[in-house]
Length: 344
Picture 1 (cartoon, rainbow, N blue to C red):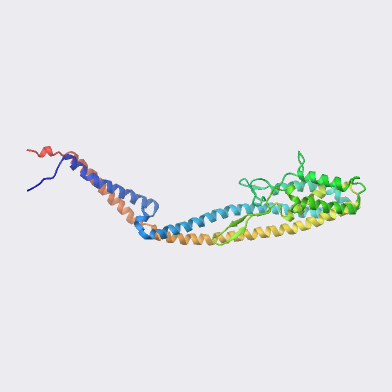
Picture 2: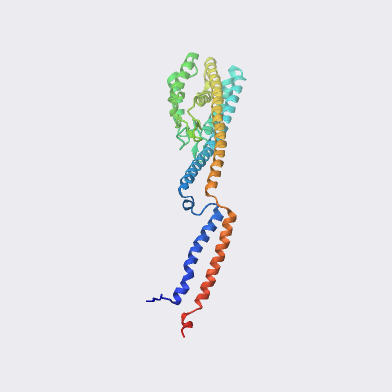
C-alpha cells in the first residue's frame, strides 16, 4: 500500500524559516565573538576546561580588588604624609623661635604663634579624604579633634583652666618653679597622656591595617592619638593656653624648658611616623608592580582558553549572512508559489 504525505503552500513557506532561525542564532554568536574576542558560550566550547577558566578569572578579580584597595590606601597615606610634613615644619619653626629668644622674652613672644600653630595642628589632624578622617585611626567617620578655642569652650580648654585653678589657687603671679613643674606633670597626666587625650580626641588608637597583596598586610594610616602629636599639642597649649607671661620668670623658665623638650621629642617622633608611612607606601608600590605582572600572566592564560580567531569569526559572519540572505530570498520566491497553480 502506498501512502502520501500532506503537502501545502504553508509548509513550503515555513520550510526555510526553521533554518533561518538557526542561522540567526549562529550569526548573533559570531558577531558577539568579534565584539568580545571570546567564545560566545565559553561553557559549551571549553566543556570541562571551563572550571579552569573561571578559576583564573576569580584570581584576576581578587588582584583587581586588591589594586583598587591599594589606590585608596595610597591616597590616605599621601594625605597623611602631607599633613605630617606641615605639622613637623611648624614644630621645628616653633622650637627655633623659642630657643632663639632670650629667656625673659620667650613667654610673651611665643603666645600668638603657639595659638596659631595649635589651630593649624587641629586642622591638619582633621584632614579628610572622600569623607573619611585620615587621622581617625579605625574610626574614620568623623574628624578626631575639636578646636581648642571656640564657643562653647572645648573639653580640652575647660580641662586646662580647671587644672590651672587647682594648681594655683592664689593666682599665678607668685607661682614658684616647683608649682609649675607639678602643674605641668599633672596637666600631662590629665589631658595629654594616652588616657587623658580622649577628652580632646575622638580617634581610635588602632590604625588601619590593609591587605596589600595576596600574602601581605601593611599599616596604612596614622592616629591623632600618637604620642608625638600629643606632645606637640601640649607644647602649644603651654605657650598659648595658660597665660604664661603672667607667671614669674623662674616659673616661665620651667614652662619654656618643658616646651623645648616636648617640641624636640615631637619632631623626632614625627620623623619616625613619616618613615613608617613611607615604608608602607613603598610596599604598596612593590605589591602593585607584582600584581600587575600576575594579572598579565592570568590574562594571557585566560585568553589562550577563551579567545577566538577574529579572522575566522569574521569569515563565519560573512558566510552566515550570505546564507540568511539566500534563505530570505528563497522564502520570498516560495510565497509567490501556490499548489493551486499545479492542479490541472
